[in-house]
Image 1: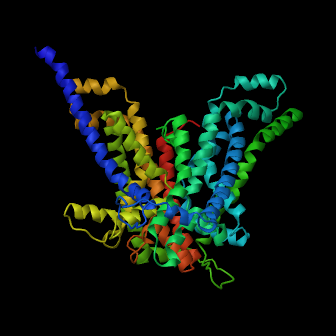
Image 2: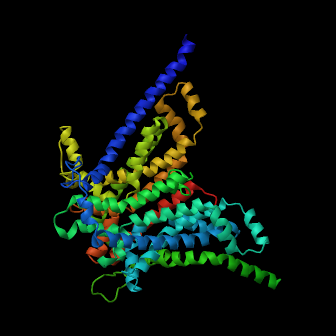
Image 3: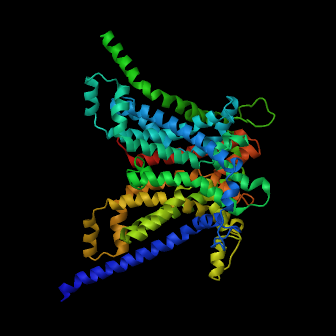
Length: 284
Length: 293
């Protein structure tokens, strides 16, 4: 009998453990979901305040009010220009840089990659004051292109690091065949390597874009004219000078502003597995 | 011989060519400002009306270490980092990851989705959500009322605790993902063998799981700390560093000195200290990673 009994107690213990784990996770999830529930519910609530609650009636008024060129479209377009430009520059430069680092042996590779790894984790916040002072001197302050260049520079170390790791995964033999057929390095990079590392390029692109889209401090410091402000900074206008805050509209705008990055994240993690961003950084 | 070596040099140069756009960007916009930072930290550069700035040596640093407000910012940065990153994000992330190992799939997926959403949200939006959560009229007090517990104005009474919680809310997903990946790599046989030998949950955690994932713990702690050292937007949105300067961490102190008080030189000296601490952590992180480049 005891022999028979053992698996059963083990199984029932396992069920008990699973229930306990479920309960624990649900408790944490409940605590985490409250601020998220507030923003979603408030955006449809005609009488939204700071407290999470189910609205008495649903309305699209809040969205209607913020969907104007001044409040939503211009800032989001600015965000798109800044982050799109920054991402294009980052991905192009990172791809080009990763190619020789992955393909050719050189004494400089190791020091270069170590410097890059070191730079990936520097607190960029700290250099915003000197960057501002520098940008004033070289007349890049309050320009979109200046901000794009800086954005690209901040994302480049991590982008190069990831891109090189992804590129190492593409076998060299395929290219060698192309070279014997007379293709140049640039041709083989574009025609052979890049198509084979599509997921890698997608990850680097989405990651760079998401990081820039959410960044507040960089445009806050480097841009001055309100017409150029991206959504991360313009969202401040809901507070600041207007006196009372219309929380429903703030919530609606927050949702409009956050949706693109959430969709991009879902898209990439669906396709390439969760936690895509961690690939190269935390292989402990 | 010479033609061969010059041909090799040319080939080397040609191969280095694709790296040059990245290097130019990095030198001009990253290394440049860092170098410039190291320079103006030793000057008395100001924003307003001052044409010439002079070299003042270590004056800015001497001033900083004698400045109560600076020391206050250092202390608050330490509290913020220890509370939110070392304890909060790290422990909660590990707890969530290990609970997920045992939980049923729907619960696991749901919790993961919620925690990750908090992480993906733009910094300022996260700041607003938690500002609303902690305000006097906010959700936290509503919940406390419901439980008949005393409510209070969190952003006024315990501002540094509120922003630390905000950082936990926003940053835990990263640790959770790191630890989930690490735990998945532990072979099932090892823990099962320990279980058969009668080791309880806590002992298995302490003697088997933690030692096996110690490298992930190290790298995760480093990255969390570096991330937390540079948090600006979240605190800015929630408290502006206030009330008074009771949630003013180093980045906010740096900003205030440089722009609200126009002391660029002094602000940059603070920035340089922040950068040095960050570099130190970054070097430790590289050691821990001990990566093959």
